[in-house]
Image (cartoon, rainbow, N blue to C red; front, side, top):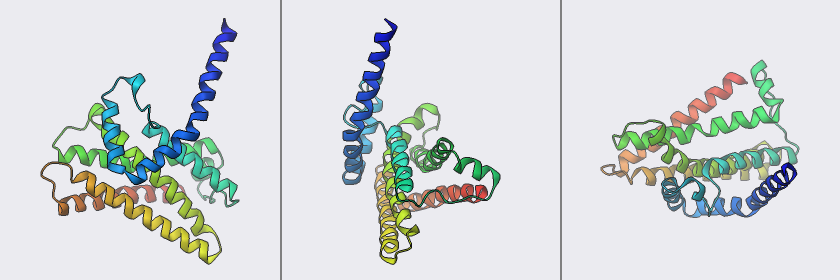
Amino acid sequence: MDFLKILRSIEELLYEAVSWLYFYPRTLFLTVLQPLKTMHYSDQEQRDREERRYLDTLSPPLFLVLSILIAHGLELATGLGVEAMRSNVGRMIAEDDQRLLMFRALMFSVHPLAFAWVWLHLQKRRADRDSLRSPFFAQCYLSGTTSILVSLGTLGVRDPRLSTTLAGVVIVAAATLWYLVVQLRWLRQVEGVGPWRATAWAVGTFLGSTGLVLLSSAVLD
């Protein structure tokens, strides 16, 4: 009986892992091409039964984690590796893949958390564990997409060839612009929030979150 349970567990694990080969690119393309629709889909899924959620795509946090994992794999495959850190804590994180991935996942979660809070603040709603969940999950789709694009661009920037460096800069700039435009459009959906106010909140939240991430990275460097 125990052996059969183990086989069933392996079967489920294998199917889940293989299904990512289809659902990861599907989720990525849907988010890039229809970001607001994908975020609205996430909001709807949060209201469904837990076992019925995200049947058409990857769940947002899983999508974010897989994006970071793929970016790290590309980093290793290109031979560029992880940039060295000088501090003891930084070296401890960089020397272990699991700790490094956890740290990067935490850093890429700062923006979703910040924008989720802004979303509730503009609606004059109290931020708690329940109310933050839906906008945070929706934001993870954006953060996952941005993380893979920015990571690809960063690899290009680190390459010594000028053409690759310029291509990397273009990718990072395009991903950043896409992210800001989507955030602006998302915040404009809040009743009473006009274009200028949405722009101010989108840019301000992005700069504040990015500054916090850069500060954290600088402390560990």
